Image: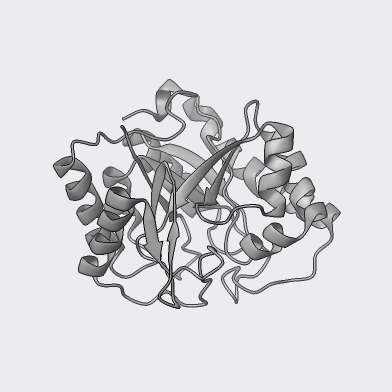
Length: 261
């Protein structure tokens, strides 16, 4: 009955600030931290890890394409060899910040434009899964619920990777079940996010941008940390789960005692 609440965080870079990490980390159970390619820098990574450890939050990597200008949301032509190295490089840097705290990566969650790329390209998907096995003893992948029969899911299942499906109350869904990747995330009404959340929890479904309805099953609720109303939406998520008697726990809590709150 427990439910995970996760956020994509650590996406500030130098003097450019994004997200409300300090406010969100005490409220959630899992964080996916940027690793320097689409956002994040060494000091931001270190501080985010320290805060996550302080609040008992499970930490995974959020590797993206080398695209600071486009925030990793522009599709790029990369080879499987390139992408394998990108994931190992970024996730390995984050793992180095976790190691002094006796913590390890709880998961890998590809960022932005990598979603549609990995959904469609079997070779790129295999490269990411290979990287995960180099990084983790028991690889775990965060992936959108509703995005089924995709290349990365097929490879992950074939290789025995645990897939943790996410529901996004603050995102739009296409008719194919994939979330709509937007260059800039605008403000979303907490009321609208709560309505989408209750529909998912009550009926296991979401309304798409064309007005159709698709079924969803997920064990984690993701609120994007770069959204200007992220804190208010997380507060609504926590309140609804508390109302329904759903305790909060990281989805990887059974894999790591440190992940449980």
